Length: 297
Image (cartoon, rainbow, N blue to C red):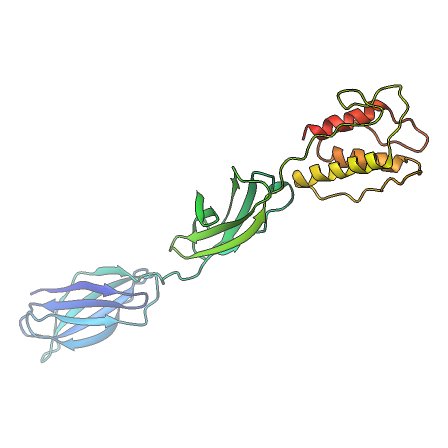
């Protein structure tokens, strides 16, 4: 005499098992189950089944991602005697399908992240199960894939070889382990080409430097052109433009005006010049240092 139970199929909350017996006089098949961590068997159904006949039963309302033990017991329908108990078969219900896309954060690159020929992009994402990778694209062309793991991750990529003064569509896609994805696109313009170098044109030598000991003569136009060139370099390097005090014809050149220019350059390339105060000398070497540091950018 013998009985068997065989696994047929499963879902997140159900398991189908097939029972069979070769017990003489057996006519009742009892389908039992329990959670694998429990010692208490529970009967779910009794199905009439003759000798050698296969009978299926689907256990429903089970817990997802949970391991269960299954068995069948065979009973004589007349005497109610128990004839056999099958070996136990363990089955774990499936996990629910993940249909939730990652939450993606991708801010528009700005400031020093944008130059005339490159754009630095940074993104972060979270997922309810597990992230798989980030994909960086430009104008619809995939450029780089960064593989990650866990429910929270970040990635970055620098797009290079770009043309100055051109608008590009940057896309970042975050993909989870189930293939769900979220994509964000940002339009970003590279900076214009590198500005021309600056040369002083008054009280200057052939290299465009101020001459030490020469009378300091710079017109309002030259100074305003100089601060304008500073702003061109600042935008080129991804800095914001400065609102300089404009030099007016016939007006005095002030320490404030000098310090504004020096500090605007120093934020990009340190000059080593300290702030000047009213009444202090402004040396030709200071002007030449500012020129040099600006042109080094």
